[in-house]
Length: 243
Length: 327
Image 1 (cartoon, chains in turn cyan, green):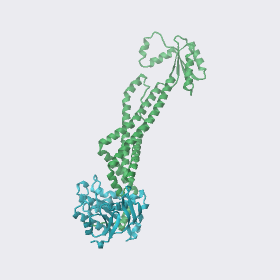
Image 2: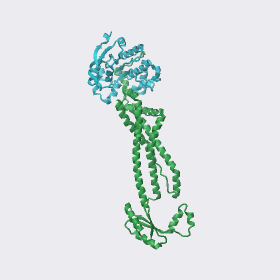
Image 3: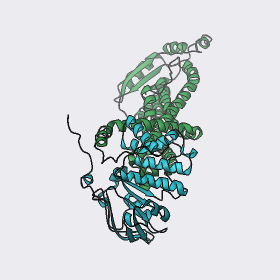
Image 4: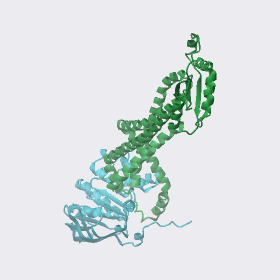
């Protein structure tokens, strides 16, 4: 029997190395607003980190740069050992398939069932139908929505919709999970549950980066915190130092 | 929320192996998405029947117009053929001219360089021809004498231009004993020239209306894409390529084109059918020589297919432009 061929990206062999590396990254928009200024930091494989700061600190811009929704004005970003500057337009979809993204407004397709929403990254990725079904059900079970698979997102509560968004983000087993204010619309108890879910993903080796301004929640989860202010890194607090 | 979490793809060797089997199926997944896109776009068209019907009707009418003109033009050509393609010149001698004069004239005309043949028709032959034509046989019985003159059927040589034939007709008119000269070739030439203009007009019209159909599909797809901007944004964020996003819209263009092509063919067939009655009546007047020329079966098949390609092209151009802006 032939040994399974390893398709793991190069970075996995460099366990413990940086999955995300920002090197002197600045982002200035066309209107002159500088959202990020000479930002440098790293997030290691299997690490979970919060990016926090007041509104306009640059949290969302940082995530947009990672997903290649925006390009930096200066500096270098390296993801999975791959410089993002070298990824041309045609390569963006491939990169995004390796990242799970969770949004504050869920970004669900309201005319498709919960199952179809979660299935979307697998359809795009060309996964076979039987395997798709298995993975979607596993993801829905994880977020506690297996019984809702045939429903439309409209019939779910905001918290449930967010969990559908999370199931969609994890169903492709991404190596990096990024979330932009994922608990912004949720009540405190549900917010904790969602954050604990992210922490569980980190436990199995997924690198997780969450942008949030909810300090009490961040303190409760006790993970590394990167603090931004007017686009600059003002503090980088290790998990064990979070009070 | 306490189900076990699956490791990320790169972490689990089992997952890696499985993913090797499930993802290394580019053709299967491509085909799967094509089938899905074709069905989904058809459903989407069906979910707004009024708008779809309107678009198909506008495109169908636009495509039916040149097709109908083509049909009519073809039949005018048939009519011309039925009435005589031979550009012969009929020279009617004055009544009372004897056969000897007629034969002399025939010999004289036949010696000309620009004449191929000359056929002499006697008054009796003329009367026999008339008798064969419907509606004349009874009328001829009331005549005491044969009033018809000798007629020379002059066939000009092949390849002569209109001016030379005109000159020949003028010369024939000037011959002694000639009453009238009927140049059937000149009206045929004018008809052919008119048909040539008509052909060109049909071609131009087809081009312009095809462009109009393309724009109609393009605009419909543009509105469709604009109304689904949010969905497209989500698809792109979760890793869909532009080709993936565009596919259902291309199929929508194909459906619009195909349906409007079928509608155009049906409209043209309706016109053809509505012409059958009047043409049958006209044909009777020409002893059944006139037949309506229908649209060739190859064209009936080609129009929907060409319209589908047109629809695809319209959708392709607009979606490429819009998705480039969305990316």
